[in-house]
Length: 345
Length: 170
Image 1 (cartoon, one colour):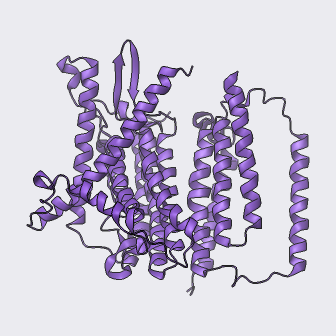
Image 2 (tube, helix red, strand yellow; image 1 turned 180 degrees about the vertical axis):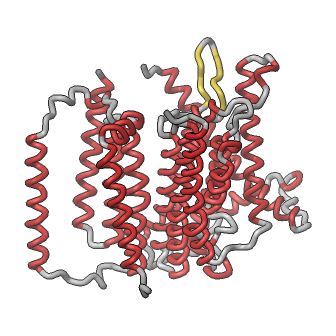
Image 3 (cartoon, helix red, strand yellow; image 1 turned 180 degrees about the horizontal axis):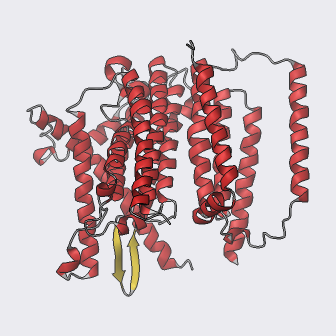
């Protein structure tokens, strides 16, 4: 039954997940600039604080202090709704991700996950598909042709890559037999990581994650050389900040989803043999998960500063003529292998 | 029991918002606003599904209707750049015919609901029918043949749409 303690625990967990998402997104902007500097043999931000560590705070302050411009001929309500939707959808995805095992406090188990709904993966798919609205509404409401082009590119790209992503997830779900992210994490204890059983599915999922977060090489919605700034051309001040920030939160959440689905989540191989207390194991698991997430965030940046942007027809060809057939093949292959190994009755 | 009341009130509030936004779809002048109100309608319906313990149907409703089909609607409207000024004026006879057809549809829906057996739904908020395991079992066990036939129908429609969209057929 719902008690006061239960509500307090959920509220604390929600606030922590929310704050961690924001702080990680904040320092991703710093990391992005440092990684870019490293790849291009520069120094990067180093003025604000030691090693430039206060740079994200300075950037945030700058965003807030800038003049807020709403174009005269734009639709004002929708113009403000766009970045709000983008930020909102970016923030609510973290609710279903299992950040760690349960903590035992005073004889009660507190799972480190906001909610374990039995359709966890589909919830993430749904929130991703709603995220398109933020970009579309903002791009259209700006009343600018470059914004509109960016919005149309973003929506067609995200819808195209959602199909391949969904098919990659179907193959994974065939293997795991559950849609709950907590059960999927729990199944991958030891070395039974899903990447071993679903290497092709992982590759497809990773490419689609790049496309869904609008990161290079799929950042056509905001390609500055063709569209000025894409869907956020007309935005200034913190509304622009919301769009940019939502991208970094999405990157963090996709890294968390990739780590959970394919790389064992919070499981540490062989930790059961060390005889540590369950609470310590749970906390170490959270640290281990964040290490994986950090690696994938770095991977996102690594790719951004290595690969050039696709052309638009190449993007569509890759999505429809390569990734979708490959993911259908992966579903068939998974089914055939499961049948051969006698896992279908 | 208090929880049951809470769910009942939530259900009514969501229903109110669903009907209100559905009416706004029809009454608002700007096509983009129409589509956005329709998205709101789908969200209220998804909320009702969740209250009825059918999370899978709720989330599929959001993914397919709100997330994909409505985005395509928006896409087309944005590309055609429809707005109040450029919207073509419809024939009044056409409007009259649309009202009559819609009314007939309403009569059919009300008639079928009147005949429906509602005694089986004693505890609507604790139903297990919409859970994904039960739904999957029913679809792939009891109704396997109709399910597969309808998927072939979808495939045929998809191939047909691609053929119609092709500019030059060799």
